Amino acid sequence: LGDLNIEGAVLRGDDLLLLHRANQSQPRNACLRFAWLEVWRWLQGGGGAVPLARDTVDYDLGAIDDVALGFTDATALPAGQWLFSAVAEATHDSYHDGVCVGTAIGIVAADGRLRALHRLAGRWKVEGDAATVLADAQTLELTLVTDADDRSQPASCLTVQLALGA
Image (cartoon, rainbow, N blue to C red; front, side):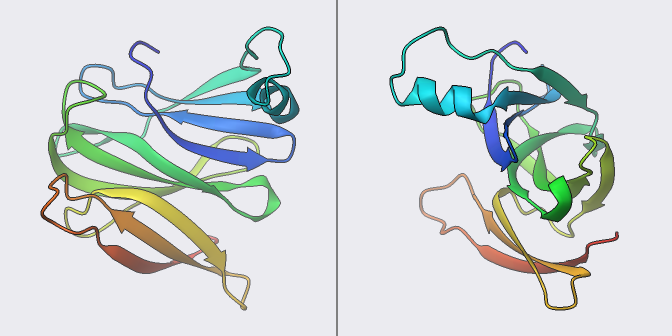
């Protein structure tokens, strides 16, 4: 994966999913799947070898204005699905910030396939997300937190609704 940049994590059943974020020099987004109990024991000092990923799945999220989208966070959804945020940030490494040209929100099905990808209006740099299934069981209410990459600018908290079947 090159310069590893884990930006999101999701617990899904017995699996821990860690999301590696792409950048302009390394446009590879990847989901590394680990056995959660193995990772938990290791983190608690249970000894043994560092757990190895069960598998790695690459995701082509496309680009906005020729800037690759890269994972920034994720959250679990019902039935084994997960939602993620991805930002198109014009930077060539995993550490230095660049100009944000846009954000997309996506849904991955329980089988690991990218099911939906929706671009947000504006140039928000969404770096945190949470989802609540509303009473109709068909709508997600997303809470999204932004990062302006400027200590003098406060983060924004956005609320967006998205049809779960979208």
